[in-house]
Length: 229
Image (tube, rainbow, N blue to C red; front, top):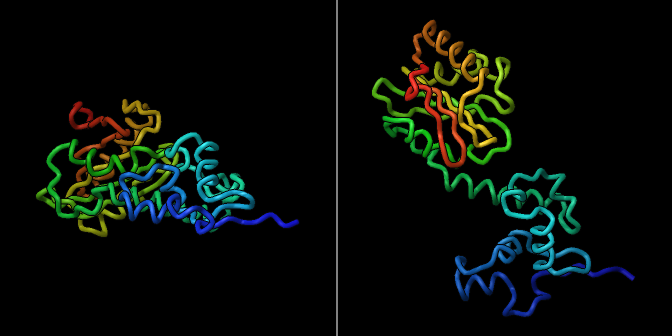
């Protein structure tokens, strides 16, 4: 006997996430209901709300679901490729909505401004992400460009890749930024060496590296503030 696949319409009207959202508003929906709206349909023998709860139980919390790969999401019974893609897309939209990375033209006066600009973009990343901020002579933001992802090393932060966006944008100065997934924003020996190398390369190109900022979810470290650049 074939096991039935449940959809939202199989739920009582008062329990359907869309009807609940219309009645009480999105702010009053549970995490389970919000996930159910994204998933849309249940699996074989389980409603969409049950599948949403199973997803939460499997990963433990939303942060782990956000960081999960397509293959990891598909390990939850009832989550197929299309649904896994929708889940990843929903989290990415939320991440982009919380980011100030589109505030081009903003004047960058202090490291805290850079931290607020990028903390939502890379503060929660499980791997190190390396970015470059291109600035005008008046310290206005021209662009924010991702250079590499992975453990920071000379191969991942080569001056050629780092300064390419700045050259294209005719930047006067740049700020380099990367995150520490460990939450410890103190610079490593590699961080210090890479900063020195990029500073020297910038002098040759006529593009001044004015700061290197290490960020986490809640804190940052500025090489400029600490007199290291």
